[in-house]
Length: 243
Image (cartoon, rainbow, N blue to C red):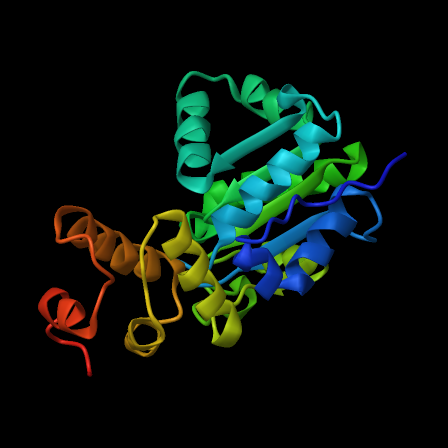
């Protein structure tokens, strides 16, 4: 069987900057990992959802059927579970996940302090091992570093600990510059070396923030005089920056 690889393009700086995460995902979806659970964690804006979308594309292009993939965020998972409990239809709730080959659950930090949700998720993880279901979860923080013992079930921590945990890094160094240049090119923005460096040093290592800044510049550029963006333009748009 042909190995499934993530479709990493030139602008996929999230994947390029996190080769360890790409390797872990590819091992899991190709059944080369000893464990069936992968947890990707990192703060908002470092590209967790982007990697998940690349993973779904890779699976579908490899021939995996759409109904063999369950992709859901933890809040929606909890909402459905509560509704199933109220209607006494938990068996139907479980079937959807047990019938899948790949289950992706985003933002599992929403399970914290919700003991019933954690217990149900833990039971699913146990069943998934027996049913050969691969599980990928994302979290805004490392679940194993949760100091409050009331926040997360110790058995769930133990199960996650036995799996693979990957810390996702935001755009830093050359990766950050590559993203700025690539995104600006996509938006037909004209940035010189001075404006590029100004954006680089005045923004955090966060894809959402970078896109917000570049979209703001693009809006200004599209209604302006049509010339290259200058430091003077940036002073007007971002008066709180250091110049």
